[in-house]
Length: 261
Image (tube, rainbow, N blue to C red; front, top):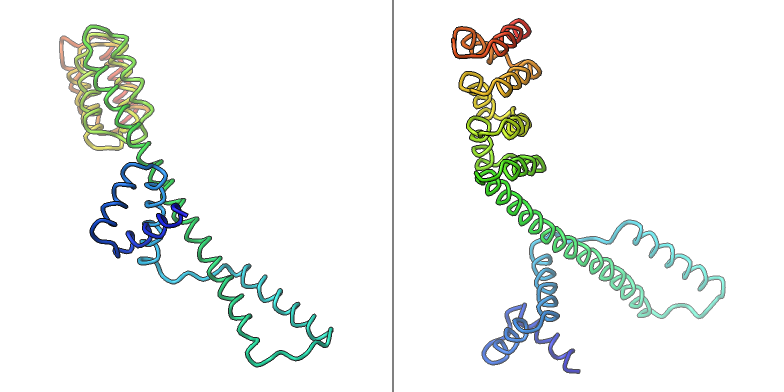
């Protein structure tokens, strides 16, 4: 009985019909009781849905099933030769039709509300997971005491389907300045996933002329050739005229120029 009374109060509260002590009572109950909080969310969702959506019609299959049922019932009445329907007996048809419509409407609204709540929860969980991943990548790349930790950070960034400005900046820094060759190479591979983005492409091409690790420089040249990136040709030509550049890098640059020209 108390539960039914509380449910009625909850409906009045959602509709904005409560004031004073009753309103305070409902708000405190919602705040302290998770089950009533869920009920409040459900009722609020239904009210919003009914206020904002267009009129919903029952599915065609429900209408067909009802019409079939009605035709069969009328046929049975005719074959049994029952007493003809009184003028006001058609009211039961209207009531059945209304019941079917309300049942279909309630089912549709329930499905929509449940799906919307589920989507919101999944989106919130995804955002939380992405934020944790980002924090892990950034903190790992900043760990100058452990190359394996920084390498783990780069590898973790590979699971992110969309680029993030902070992570991109951290990967570019790792590619250009990390003291460990493996970390630099991993950073190049991670950045290559977003090469279609102009800032990333420019950073990779720029690294051709500033990279002081021969192994990483050759990896960058091969990447430009693989991507058929003709904008890198000028940077490759500049490598040929620098005395401090390793001969193996110059040889690879010369081959890259040939492939891209």
